[in-house]
Image (tube, rainbow, N blue to C red; front, side):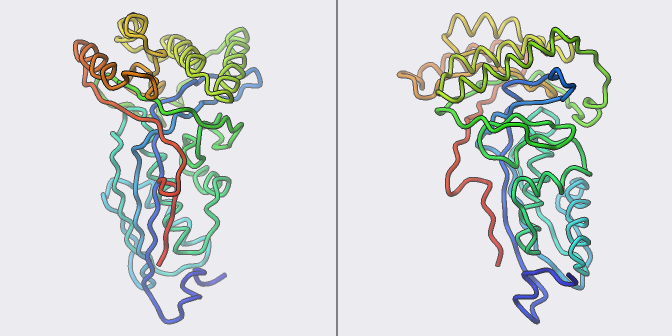
Length: 310
């Protein structure tokens, strides 16, 4: 294949455009190591994400905006080279995800890039194909898949689809600073067999809770995972949040396991949710850090997973 598929369908046209998007995830509902040694995480897709716009230019250089998004630039170049496309183009990324906080900002950039560039070049951008495109770039969250999934982020491979939940909200406290997820994932850590067995049970518990929409069960798993993560990346607000969860009737505590945030998980369908949200935000504001609110994403026809080429 010497020319991009979409260019071949539009003979004589040198510029083609594609747009796409990808959601972020508020940390993880669960993250750990399984008995077989697999490092895994369970995603919690949120409404925020990254939007990508790509214009192919057969005779021009390849550029990315903002310029620091070099991983997305590398991915776009790889995809152009894979189908023998000459030239380059312009890749523009617009994200509302904070960087270095554990919201999968880099993964969302890469997935949106793969979808936008792939839409223009006529390449496969199914979730499995996106995994293949991203695997050589870096460890990646499973945000190329819709809904909650169990994902091997080091091998960039889906392990299990769990489904979706009723609408939920996270009131988060950011403790500040930035975390390099790639560097963090390179750290060696010992996870003993008894703990690996517990993580396997937690995966089963989470799968069962998601299957029936048991938000309290999901909250219990998320809380246990946040507690276990204290041995590797402690959150100084965790004890206070655990106490607040009991007092305010939250479902549990969630954290960005390789990030700087922890917060309370709330049932957005519960009666009086708006008042509860106001109360929880006020309580969280008394902790050291910056308070923000994240809402769970639900699959829809206008989700950030959509693509368009013209």
